[in-house]
Length: 227
Ligand SMILES: NC(=O)c1ccc[n+]([C@@H]2O[C@H](COP(=O)([O-])OP(=O)(O)OC[C@H]3O[C@@H](n4cnc5c(N)ncnc54)[C@H](OP(=O)(O)O)[C@@H]3O)[C@@H](O)[C@H]2O)c1
Image 1: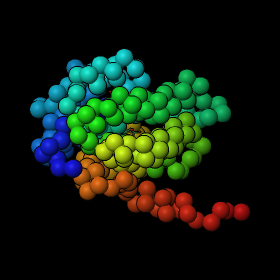
Image 2: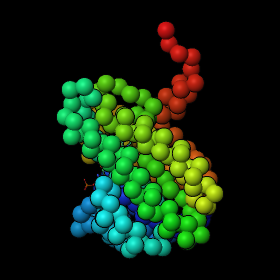
Image 3: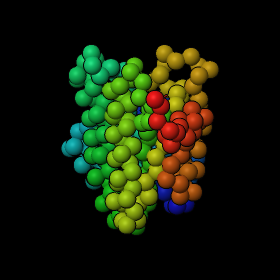
Image 4: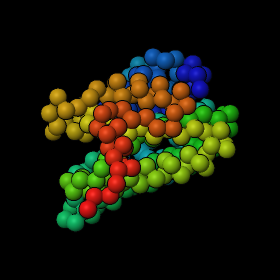
């Protein structure tokens, strides 16, 4: 893919990593639909604001209708309730799955035909190191990101014959609202991550590991089981 011929849609583009994706895509010459639950919260000059709640099928259907020229979707929108699985609020646990798994799936299903009609393209799914690492303190989030990882792998195979590349981004802490409680020296710049992930998409990579933690945890997946 060539960035100059890209029409991209970024979910959750009003703040955090999504905003940085939108900025980076604009800088590379792409047309950008900046999608957000509240489009009035989009303050990036040069983008096309679009209403999109990924958990609302009607909102997703309308977005796919309005952004019919898209050939790259960045599935970035996400939540972190920090709910634990045994004692945490079940509504929070469901919200994580509704957002990271069913919400992303809503967007994948609505936009696959759009990208296909436009001659093929790509989807970039924002996952996490917590797709693989499952600490008790973030059980709901980790389970939802693990589901997102499985989704990503399966739809990659489904969409390849339709001319759509699917890339996974795994990353640890980034400096956004989601982890405002984490000390600054433990977080990396989301702008750097957005650039690296887009480099990966345009180079045809199926997986981008954006930090040392993600690389170390991925390497451990093939380690022998512990006693
Ligand atoms: N920050 C990290 O350390 C970190 C690490 C690994 C992965 N990630 C992942 O990176 C992605 C971006 O997160 P972030 O760090 O930028 O967090 P953030 O600053 O909290 O931003 C989250 C974004 O997702 C949007 N969103 C949430 N639910 C939505 C829905 N149902 N429909 C549409 N948009 C929705 C939010 O919109 P509103 O403004 O309307 O709430 C906001 O734009 C997420 O997938 C997250 O899981 C983050």
